[in-house]
Every structure is written in structure tokens, then in C-alpha cells.
Length: 318
Image (cartoon, rainbow, N blue to C red; front, side, top):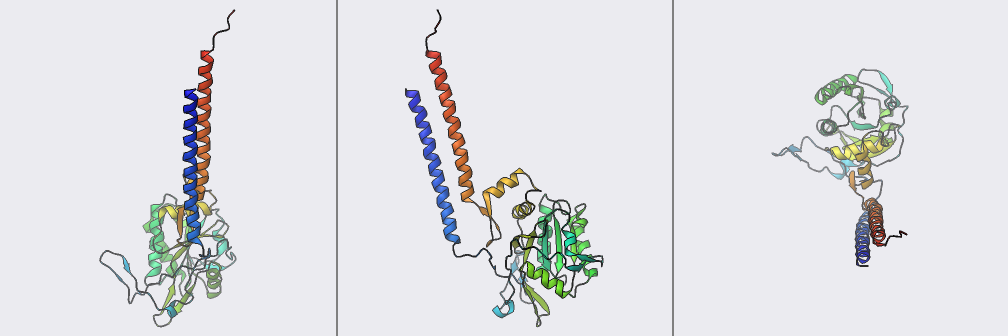
């Protein structure tokens, strides 16, 4: 009887522990929901704009940024349009000077990272392109094999010659075999540029005084079918976040089992542009694990108890 009581006690403690963990995870989830109330899914993060005449590098290499006046950044926002399909029939010119359609770059079955900027940009576009290069070098996913990059200029004055030079320089720095088939640089005319940028919610404007564009900094991750999947903001992209966005956009056609588990345990925060811990999913996974654990312990205990009782019974020999 004492053994049975000990088994029951163990099961009771496991049940209490499971309930406590469930309540803790539930409270964390509730706090997350409460803190997120009032925030729109289609967020409009502040535009990161750089003024070369005023901004400077600090001694530690970080960017010292001074805010522009509100009038200068009117319309310079990024409106998230998740699920929006790009107008794939738009025509652009590639780095070889050939006329291409946007849809030509969505036939490989790979997710695409869209980088919008202009090739004569004095500061911010270079930072975004360099950050794109850095994260491509840091991830084990390969350009042209696992995903593609599409760098499109929104300045109609940019030419295919400049696009070709940009591509040559960045491919040489990337140093990945086959990347030339996956990283493309395009230029275009106003109608195509306007249709593309509006379809992904990318705002920019021309500043006549400075003779430059004012625009935001972000990468836009697209599905192989050309639908907007995620936005990554700023001029620094974490390899872990970028990898998960690409795996998610590909519907797990790239990546591995670990990525699938991480996507379950983490949810994308549209306001922060990164993945955050998902308490609700962890609570569910923990609940299933706890039930399996308790069931296993109970079955083992009952099996051993019956085995002991059977060994104590007297023989029935004649």
C-alpha cells in the first residue's frame, strides 16, 4: 500500500507542476496580448532616414543620426501589406540592359528578398545593401540556391550600367558560387517603380534642396509566388530572424526540422520586425509533453506494481 501511495504522490506532484507551468505560460501570454492591445498589425514604423550633410560616424563606428523635420518625411513610411501579391507583369531593365518582367524572378520556387533603394544614394541605401550582404554571408542559406535577392532602384535616372557595376561589386564581396543567378539588380521607369513600391507599401520622396531621395530602410521578404510575407526593418539584420523569415516564406521548403520547431515556439512581431517567444505555443507544447510524461510514469508504475503483486502470489501447483 505504501508503494501505491508513493506512486499516487508522484503523479499528484507531476499534475501540480503541469498546472503551474500552464498557468505561468497562460499569464505570460495574457500579458503579451494585453501589451499588444491598441497596436495595429499593419504598423507604420518610423522611417530611418540619413542626411549625409548632418550625420556623421562616431568614434566607435556607429551611426549618429539626426532627425529630419516632420515636413521632410511626410509620406516616407512603410505600410505593411502582408499577403499582397506583387504586380508580376511590370517591366524593368536588368543589369545586362535587357527588358524583363518582375514575374521572371518568381519562377525558381525560392523565396525572394526585395531590396528597394537607389544606386546613387549617398548613405542609407549603401547601408541596407551592406547589411543584406552581411546577413547573406552569415547565414548557411545560399543565394541562388535557397533564396534570391532582388535589388530594385526607385530612381528612374539609374541605368543598367550602374546596376551591373553594383552587382559585380557585391557578388565579388559575397563570394558564393552560383549567387549571380540569384542576386539581381534592376532599374525601371516611373510607372513600374510607382506600381511596385505602392504594392509593398514602400514610401519615398524627392528632396529638391538636397537633390536626394528621403526614404525608409527595410527588406521585404516575398514568397516564391510573389506575395509579401515579412518586413525586416533597419540597417542590421539578424541571421536567425532572416533565416526564419525565409523558411516561413518558403513554407518550410528550405531549412530543417529545427527551423520548424523554432517557428512553432516563436511568433513574428510586426511592430518589432523580429520573432518573439510565443508563450501560448510553448504552453500547448508543454501541456502535451506533460501529459505524455505523466502517462508514461503512471503506466510504468502500474506495470511494476502488478509485477510485484504477481510475484507475491502463491503457486497453484497440484
